Image (tube, rainbow, N blue to C red):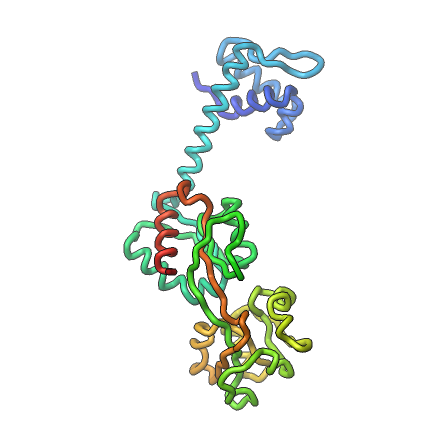
Length: 296
């Protein structure tokens, strides 16, 4: 006997919905197709599974018994599908990691190299996302692990301190601020800025830093790409706020100067997060433990 899984899904839907029409909607079939699928299942098992009446359908004792078995079978199939998703098409363990742009550029190249040195057969799916979205992505199981920066650990996930960075002000050589040893951002407010600020939008940045500013900032251009932003700084289009380690890459190359910011918000704490560690897939759990360890 070869019972189609879609027939078992239809039986489960019909018993739970008490209606072939509603069961069909649930399985994206018209009522006649839903009825035909149940009829074919009854033919295969050799017994009546549902009693039709004007109020809908009711399972026979045989239908009720098969319903419970079908639920268990479908759950096992989903477990099997979940297990298969742990691997790439070539059978290598797959890990889904979401991180914000700063972490991807500054920290993850070195850390991923260190992890893969000990786990060379792992396969990493790295997704760039905003820090504010990453804990939700982990909680919703869209990814296995997330790296984000925030004032404190996000609710709904298990978070550990990962890395700390600082953002600095980047100006061209010869700029009036270029000789400053350190300053508050408010001291640079009179100059034009090139946007893409911590927290990824100017509005969100003002929620973070607005109390430290005595007036509005003039943001001429919003540009996310770090190299493009630095090249625009070199051309005199504005000055920029960016992570220090990333700024260091372009200082000598483009003739720029970095100025430390004294503002408290300029230091950022990154966290690595996951859901229930005990329920994590083996490869993902190994990477999570590695990132927690290197972050200490």
